Amino acid sequence: PAAALLVIHRHAVKFAGFLKSWLEAAKVDGRVHSVFTNSVVVSGRQSSRDPNMQQIALPWRYAFIPSDGRIMGAADYAQLEVRIAAFVSRDPALMAIVTEPPDTPQGDIHGQNVTKLFAVSYENQHLPTFDKAFRVRAKNYLFGALYGSRGLEVQTVLEQKFLEMELEGAVPTVREIARGIDALRGAYSIYFHEYIPYTLQKARENDCTFWTAFGRPRRIPELLSGYKEEREAAERSGISHTVQGTAADIARMASNGIGRIDHGALLTVNHDEFVFEVDTDYEEWYGARVVAIMELGQPLEGVPLFVDVGWGPNWAECHK
Image (cartoon, rainbow, N blue to C red; front, side, top):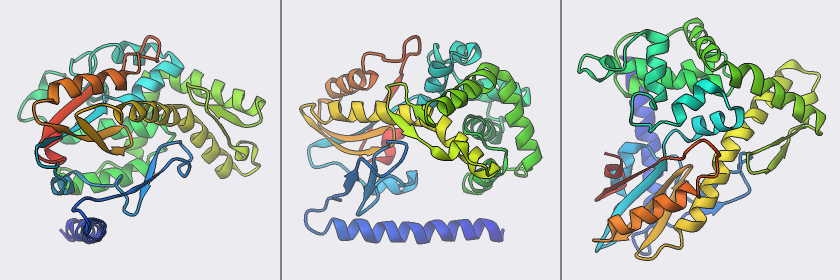
């Protein structure tokens, strides 16, 4: 019980700090005016300061509402980093999933991984008795695998999620998580056992340089370090650049276009999520243009981009 209370207290303190900065920033006209920077985060993602608008938990988003006569909207990519991983590696198992719509059994990678890891059929995952902890675990195991975790980092994330979401049961041990990660590495073997070694070798041969799918380079000299820990961290960062860096490239290109659509305004970019306000009765018109822009003419050959758009009276309810 004490651990849960400490997490609640930590969130309350963090929220109070955010709220104070928002109110201070909104003194003039009731709106938060943040500074977005383009060259701070090494992955290429935009960052935000004074105040930071990119670490706003879902419950806090109720505080953000549109101007009079407008409705709030939000659009984000479905499984973007998984799709990029499939594109750069051409892993047949990943490709079979990402070429299907994400709201179908065949295209729901996290649902598929629940079946692989815990032997729960897709049909049973939609029953009221289904334990949501299985999906939370499968999702975090996958991203732990994609970015080189050995289990401890994933366990730290799961400990917090189990408390926040009030999930039943014990948090899995590092050994259990490592077994799950290994199982996913076996399921998507081309990505893990062919693409990653090939990409690391290619970078070593090219002055420790990694590239996104759009050709944006990042040099990581620690790739040749004599210290094992430093070298392995560089390897993880390099592989991350090819996937997360590509996601950042896509988000930047999309934000440039969304900011030019009439009858609305792009308010903030939260990694690969775009938040905007739109004149009432223009939601369908505006949303269709947002989707078309975010799809970018489908630049990942053979891997379609899917975009979800939601609307609401505030930012939080756009996701319902």
